[in-house]
Length: 154
Image (cartoon, rainbow, N blue to C red):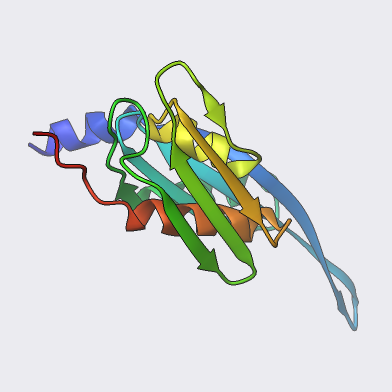
């Protein structure tokens, strides 16, 4: 059983969404570090977001990947799209996500496109209002996906 979990974790695809150079003024000069935002998903309904910081870019990315794997969520998918519409306010961002018919593609912008692609959602439309901060927008989309419920198909 443990080996199956390891192979499942190895099949995860990861994408770096954002790398920021953070500088802090100190008495001895500047303290420079890097912050990385990474999205991890398996394309079958599991997706996670992680934020990592480090003195160099590769350790920051590794920390973000580890954090994303720890905080993965399961997204309900109905016919390669969302099961229903969802509207959410998270901090300064408002997120509207809607299902779309087959063949429409992803009509969402910025980080939502990356998250949907790695989650295995190929037809959806949506809008992010109120914030241009990619970190806040990423977490807002994840919160909106957590609110989705499985659709009853009878």
